[in-house]
Amino acid sequence: MQINEVERRVGITKKNIRFYEQEGLLAPSRQAGNGYRNYSEADVARLEQIKLLRKLDVPLGEIGQMLAGRLPLAEGMRRHLITLENRQANLASAQGLATALAQEPGLLADLDAAAHLARMDALEKEGVRFINIQKQDKARRYRGAALAAAVFTLLMAALEGMLAWAMLTDPIPWPLALGFMAVPAVMVIGVLLALRDRFRQIEEGEEDLAAKY
Image (cartoon, rainbow, N blue to C red; front, side):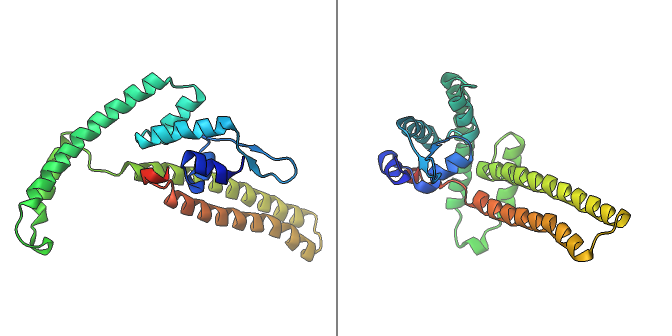
């Protein structure tokens, strides 16, 4: 079936379906000849499993482990329950701070934030976390994409060096030599452009409204 039908049946946007495929959670078959994705009933069931766990805010990494059978469902959910309990405690602390701020008179411009920041720092030292987990996930993907691009660039630089050495030891016509050396340079430019697009995809990430899963 086509992606439009999958979107209608599962209630997950096409953007997220493709995102889950990029993350390795889904691998639809390809039609012979045109290479179009062909989604099966098993893919639909898999997307429903992903949707269920994402609506419970289970991280993509753990969903991947459970889908691959490396992590039993019960164990994965026990881990997630611990995460939710910690998050609930953090939320209670944030609620307390928000309650204190709600009792402040006047405008934000008049607020002395230093005292509240000091209280927040004290809570963080006790283990409370006021952070954005999604930003941590993005940082991991940024590092992976940048590392892959760096390795490829180094390989192309080594190739350029070998070509230059070959031309010096056994000269060939410069126009031809420049043509040979331009190939790795163009490939590096292509990789850097792809890296830029990948960073944009990472920045967009998964649509985070539950209704759009």
